Image (cartoon, rainbow, N blue to C red; front, top):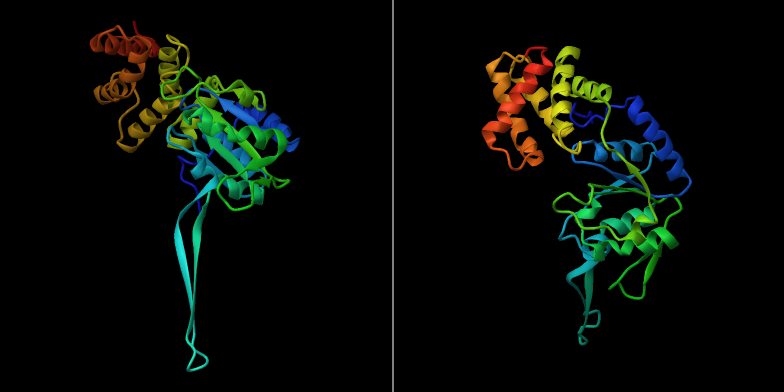
Amino acid sequence: MSQSKKEVFVNTAFFEKIISKTLKYMKAGFPVHFVGPSGIGKTSLAIYIAKQFNRPVTIIRGHEELSNKELLGYHYGMVKKEVIDNFIHSVYKTEKEFKPIWSTGQLIDGVKNGHVVIYDEFSRSRPETNNIFLALLEERILPIYGKGKESFIKCHPDFSIIFTSNPDEYAGTFHTQDALLDRLITISLEGCDKETEIEILKQKTEINDQEAERIVQLVSKLRSYGKGFCPSLRASLMIASIAKKTNIPIIQEDKNYQTLCLDVLTRPVKQIFPDMTRDAIQDLILKEMKRREGTK
């Protein structure tokens, strides 16, 4: 099955260094944690690296309601088995057996069968849920509950795991316990360089060099007003993709392009300047668009 442009990971010199050291750490048996702002490409990077091992890949999405039941498994009903013995005409015997139905969790499959597990946005799950990874990473065993006499599963020798998360200050995330972070090699992805962002836009949306550079320069300048988190790479991709698909010229003077940039960028820039009015923010965006074009 061929991948869409959106799904293809764009490898550049910037990412190559990260990929190279991550593969070394994982081959040595250590879990890796990518942390960085939304839209930087953490998940795409994790999937690309996981595929280099030529093993099955299991992706677990972190969220507030994720529980050990989903990770490990649970009983969800009963199955009845009935045997009727009427071999001798005058003797009628029946046997009934009830057994609980077990649904195996995502993590168990990965641990038992040596998958590369990607725990995406794990800090969106509650710390008590993530506690199960402490024994898994330290002792290479997975404690399980509610499945008869089996109390734990030993890790397959080929099992490995990649974690991804946003910084703690992001809304919707929980503070990660130090005991878990101590077991991970954390690689910070603060942001791609401009050359990498330009290449990503070109390959994923098929715009040309000049158009990609124009978008990246605008978004990078707006990003520099804050902590570098937003507007994210996703914003650049939205602008490039919509402009390409709807034949909007990527030039400052075009009114449709101005409207597109304002619609995509106003909300993230508002996060940087929460006290500014919407009109003031849009004036700032338009000013930076003109500045990027070399006009005053």
